[in-house]
Length: 348
Image (cartoon, rainbow, N blue to C red; front, side, top):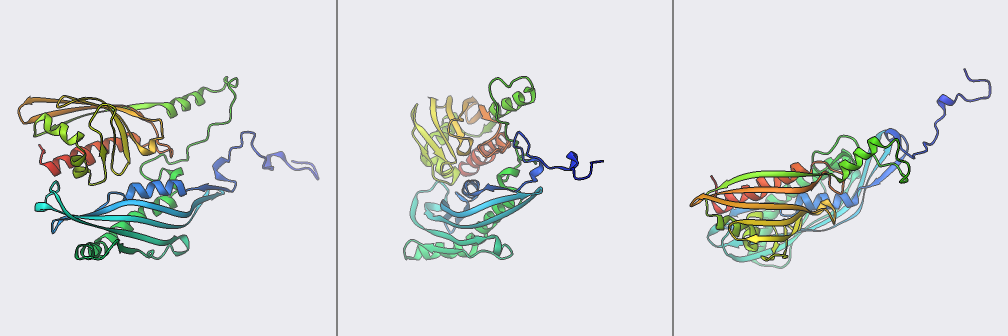
């Protein structure tokens, strides 16, 4: 029992020497606007609204701006999100010859999608959405009508995904897909000499700097040269990704896909036989490139086997999400190889 006029030390809350905010007890605010910008770009850019309807393709182009504020306050372990943002993006529409995905573009139209005010104070209401066209004309009017009828709902669904993730903790809780359930602890400030008790810390450093390797084998009903051409031809890349892409078909040439979400550089190019690239998602960080090696085998004419080995995949992205390997595998399997089969008819 404590003496009169003396406090019991067991009940005194003191600042920790390491500065840790254990269990989020003290008030803490995290700026989530950078994460929100990236998340909305990932969710919306390239979003297909219609594909082939009346020979038309309409999709969301670029998320041009996300301004305002988005944050999460933590107090006594409770997370309190707050947001007040304005979002602007573009949409693009195309009419293609023959109603085919790889048909020549006959005419096009474009416009904008504008959320003037998305705020927590109006969380129980759908935010206002403005659909505009860049100029007047029959095709522009038709595309705008489709955006109002179908695009508005699809875009709002993606915005609601972001809001749900923000309410769940945003980047701290791995919003954006399957990250750890608890916030990633900050490494304690250290000096090179303070090494003795650092076995757990050394393991953490290894995990942060660690990489993984992905291996895949895919079969296609086509010549090896055909599938090689699809992966190295800018127009064909845009056809199956349904998003802006750039590709310089030369060793040392740069490339980007999915509106810049994937970027890299060609290291080795042997038509129909081998393709080696420096490759990364834009959210891995500036210097975190993996190495992709794709070999093409054609055991019999018209049947090609692709072997992919991707080494150097980081354990986590720049937002602390640990689902990088799964995200990469999903991208290759569904958004690249799967779509190539659908668009060009190379399915097994």
